[in-house]
Structures are given as C-alpha cells and as structure tokens.
Image (cartoon, rainbow, N blue to C red):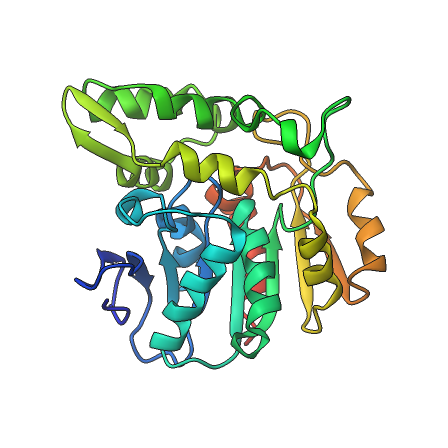
Length: 294
C-alpha cells in the first residue's frame, strides 16, 4: 500500500487484507489526518474537505466491503473496521493524529479511539458517532437498515447501463438537488463496479447491514464512548439523508455529555447529512475543525 502521494490517487497494496486508500496533500506533512467515510460511501467522499486543506496530508481509505476494498471478506462491523484502520495508521508510522469520521465512519472513529487511543489525538465526528434513536416501535435487532437509508441502500440491488445512468441516479437524490458538483460525480464514479451494461454499486450489502445494526448503542459502544479521553467535536447537520428530518434532532446530542464530558457540539447551518461533507459551505466547517494548526 502506498500512502504518500502528492495528489489524490487510488492505490492498494498487493498484500491481501489491505485497504485501498486515497491520499490527498503533500507527502511530507508529518502525521496524516485519517478520514473515515459513511456506511455505503467511499474514500472520495472527502474530496471537498481535502481541497480546502491543500497543505494537509489526508488518508481516506475505502472501508472493507466498499469501493476498491469490496473484495475484502467479512465479517464486518465497527470493531473490524477499527482493526483495519489501526493497521493502516501503524503502517503510516503510528502516532496520535486527528481522526475525521462521517456518519457510520464517525462510529468507526470512536471504536478506533477506544481500541487504540495511542493513535488518536482528537476526534472530529461529522453528523455521526453517537447512538441513533430507534424508530418508534422498533428494536435494534429487528431494524430494516435498508429502508432507513433510502436510495443509498436501494441502489445496491440495482444495475446501471452506463456511468451516465448512475450519475443520473445521484442527481435526483433529494440531498443533492441543489448541490451537484464535480466532487459528487467523482465520488459516484469511484463507487461503480462491474462493466456496462451491468454496472453496480461496489458496496457489499452484507457489510451495510452488519455495520448498520451497530449504530444504535450496544453496550460495548456506550463503554467506548465513556472511555474517551481525547478532545471530541461533533458537527450536526440540521437536515438528514433525504434533506428532511435530521439524524440528530436539535438538542439530542446534549444527552451524550454524560458519557463524554469533553464533548463540543458544533451546529452547521443549511446542510444535510451529505452536503455537510460535499458542499463547500459544510466542508469548510469540517476543514476548520480538522486543521489543528489554525
């Protein structure tokens, strides 16, 4: 695996079990920021943030079961991803560094911090990382994760005739109705697998389901939050996956101060769960939190 690249490029070691990584920024920038994507996403979700931090080296892996890492076998789960990322950071020289996590990636960041606090100087959690509220009448072991995720999950069972058809699918997604950009297009192209006319999303459905089942606060995860000692910032989007109801209602994150007293909550205006990362107005806030030198 090559992690030192002067610009964004995709790469993976020939050794099995190694994550594919997109590396941004200079190769000589000391310890790289680690950026962890969401449940059906990939490392190119961080393009907009990285463009706003040209002097910072950022490692953005494709997690096991996604994009260029989708051939890595299960089991999946937050702790398995944390193990993978610990190997990545150790290979990059180790040392405590800033960890960014978006959505499910924020939960993985917490799992990494709990398992390997020596690798984590601070956590920046982007609209994720704290147990989600269960839908009314639902139980954690009987959730329809695909239904909760909407189009992001529906696409996993679809085929697309060409890249244009796949991009059209994302263009009509409610989250991107007014925020389509080259960064979203790059992200979508990175997700494609197969050959026309049988192109599919690269995300493994089993990975989505296994990971999604751990986002509602199992006991081990609450213990992980309780044990955090590094600075923790969470950025909240006022709108959710479909540009409507948010993942965390106003004030909902305050309850987690009982577990994480050092928690700092940042409200990011006029973004949804996706555009907090993809639109410059959201990515600028993420970048400001990630750049510890300012």
